Amino acid sequence: MKKLFSSAVGLALLAVPAIVLAQDTVVATEPMNYWGLGLALLGAALATGIPCTGSAIGVSIVGQAGSGLLTEKPELAGKVITLAVLPGSQGLYGMVISLLFLFSFGGPLLSGDISLDFPAGLALFSAFLPVAIAAGTSAPAQGKVCAAGMHMLARDSRLAGRVITLAALVETYALLGFLISFFMLNALKDTLLS
Image 1: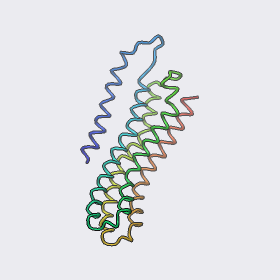
Image 2 (image 1 turned 90 degrees about the vertical axis):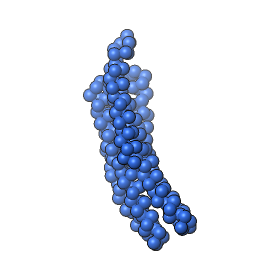
Image 3 (image 1 turned 45 degrees about the vertical axis):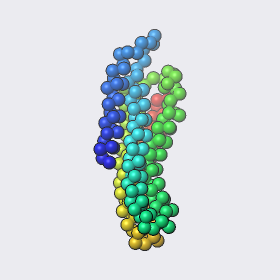
């Protein structure tokens, strides 16, 4: 599980040298700085990729625990599926932030109407980090909480609300990362696109 998560981060970071090396191959009548654009797009990719990887791990953890419970108590399928869905929301947080970037910045950046220098690209890259890190790490943790909750449900199916409450506490931190990334992107939008 940790191997898969660290492999996804490692592969994403391998893209940085490709962006750097691509700088010298661009020939244009008007020199354009692609460093900033490359960093911004890498940040958007990480903001989706890391939380989605974390969500896949979290959902897998809950699914494995839930499968065991459902063999003994198939009548709890609705509650088990509800718990299995919870860690998947973090992937959505990352995707929404990436889509916000693409819809707000994508047109002007890719058409060449505006260009990003290295500091602006680094600022945008930094705006993706809160959601990438918070959502990517909270999803597996939430999966563990939900998996542990399966033991509670096995003893007393009326405890589903308590399990969901415990899982929601973990998700709070993914939501905080989402909000910070959202506000950072909106602040940079006003600055960079004006």
